[in-house]
Length: 445
Image (cartoon, rainbow, N blue to C red; front, side, top):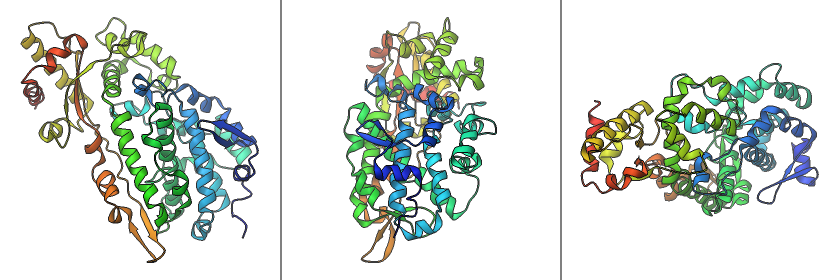
């Protein structure tokens, strides 16, 4: 039987090996005329000037790869998923050729609305800050270059792509398509774990069998999402573990969080002065220049210069509290709004100035905590052909039950206090620092 999607040009090129572009690591990505048309737009090229990992390069110098590269990787994964899933008669019966092409375009454009340090800023939940989906909608609106190309080159209405990126309809078909781009075992996660690990120079995100996992993909029992066959169980478990370790050792590394918290505190104070509509359309380099200019002569200047100037000066970790080792402090501070974290930091700075009998600026102390938004739980069905039944993976896998289904944030994200290097040692050596922190928080209740 012929593959149902074999006539899609990108899938045809995937199989023939023609018209390829090479991205790390030795990954050949099919480039058709219509793919190149999307990639060559101003909106898409902007992604080549926005790093994927933001401040992780402060710790891992190689982690300077861009959202442009990531988008190509996700698009490539979409082709591999469709080739495998097209062999599942249930999938082919639900997803026709046109919908498969819409998914391919959506995979390529899934990050189109992102700006520099996007997720960090969105996690702050500040009033007046738009979601990146707003810009995706704008870039795909009538008259924009992307919209014109989707219609003329792909025969796709921009709203069809947006319905995947910003869910609107709620049909079985659309839930199934969206699960490929955003779900437990999706094309986005499969790329960023592998790619971030590669560029960071660590093995953690690459220690799962990507091909084995893809070859085990099938439709779940309800027909509205992905499942895996039993042969993919170990690969799925290793992917769960890879995600856990990457968050623990890369995304939430203490020095990465120091730079992130310095940026967040500066942005909190400076963003009311910014023209946000224009600011979020800038390249990363230009957005940094704007922020440095706004910070000049303010208390935020050494925060901004500490992470962006040629003289790096990161704040030092002076205290750390995890859910399992310091539950009381963790639960007191975690998942609170940025305005509260700033107020508590200022309270603590004032108390430290009194204790140390020296000047402590209000921005010399920073409290970092898991954001109000929590990571989505990771679970997926596994199908046993021998028993002819589906089960939740966590039922048959203690790894998934422990590291993915239970609250993921509580394992990998911690409450931390950072201090300016001039006072960091004194803070770290205080026997009652934890009590001072608690009092600084309770003072605002």
